[in-house]
Image (cartoon, rainbow, N blue to C red; front, side, top):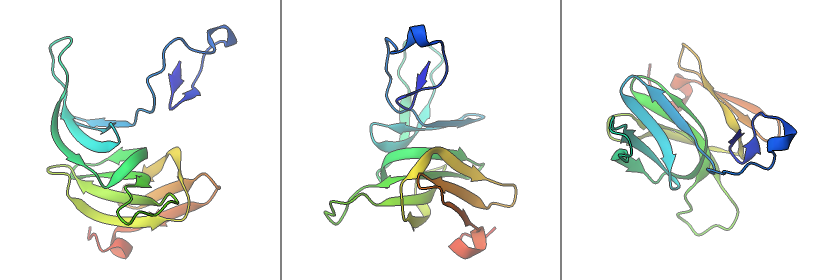
Length: 149
């Protein structure tokens, strides 16, 4: 089985895999599904009919590549590569919280390096932990981000 362009598990005889879906970052809770959709974070509805494509509720262009995602009741926290607004050639990375209802950016903070795949966690107190590929781990609190409780 493959996930995020890397072999997740499976015997060597199945490597390389016959199917490649590309990066898939998805979070689901109750009736809410948020995923990376063609380089955008999107809330989608999951249709019950077989073969029916999901409908997009909203899309956010804040990030162009999502590496990690955690879904809460009112916000989804995402870490990834920012969409370049200033024409910079070097990749810029960030962690951000988007409103579940409409995808509005609640807060965003730049990161000094690329986030690790699946390298994001939110604890019961609302602290956000982001692991970077260079081994550093950042912790953001709601108070420090101005996000309230």
